[in-house]
Length: 106
Ligand code: FES
Image (tube, rainbow, N blue to C red; front, side):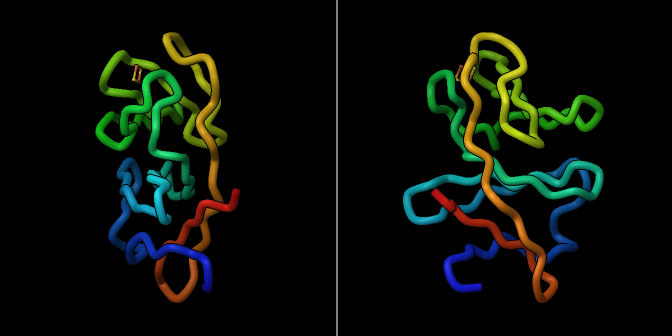
């Protein structure tokens, strides 16, 4: 798993929960959406605030920024409403050895 950042054990991130990790200088939020894992840059594209302080809506599959209410699709990072118009970067997620891993692959 060289180049990958450990997030937590698989049992420590339950559906509807999220966790923040850093890959170097990149903050990443990993979300469990009904058992599927997704990773986005933890930086709202509106004014750079941390999305991981916001809220996940499992029904919509979105994460909402706590500052001005922009929502992003957890699955691909696209902006769903104003005041954000540009997507946040999506990162890969892997499950290996009972742990969740992610990385900034740019
Ligand atoms: S900083 Fe996220 S909506 Fe404004």
